[in-house]
Image 1: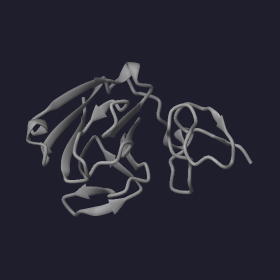
Image 2: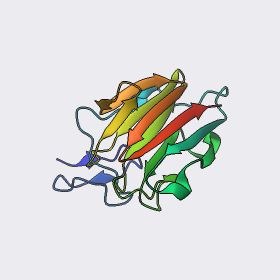
Image 3: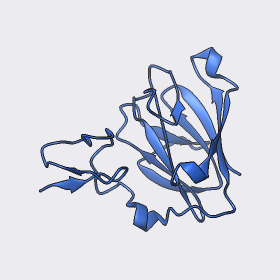
Image 4: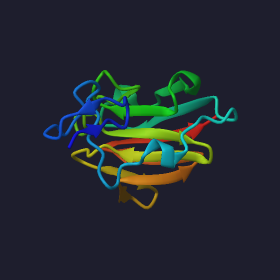
Amino acid sequence: MPWKCPVCGTENPDELNTCRICGAYRPTATTVNLSQADAKISVAFAALLVEVLDSPVKSLVGLVKRIDLTSKNGIVTVGRSLENDVVILDPSVSRRHLRVIIARDGLIIEDLQSTNGTYLLPKGERINVAKVGREALVKIGESILRFILE
């Protein structure tokens, strides 16, 4: 049975596990449906700040990227591929590692079936999907990122 991509909306044949257009992973039981997430951007959130706090790639440490949310439809992707909104060139980070969904009540962090997982800090619990509020500290691969809604 064909499935619809949660990112771009393309219908894909059942035998594919990634979208033929954007490369997003096929939704699973843990994938957040954007209508469930209520991902409409609130005017209170103009931007998402992403800061690299630690990484084996020392040139990334201290990097701060401000992403204008009005042009992103409430979704920001993070990974090693240059197609992501936030590119982390750490070899232990997957090409499409996670996505951040901006909902009215804060951030939803969703792991995109990455190889090394996504961990919420400071507890270090591995997550598939988690609502985290307005700020999150996340470990992907060997890199630590902070997400802050403005």
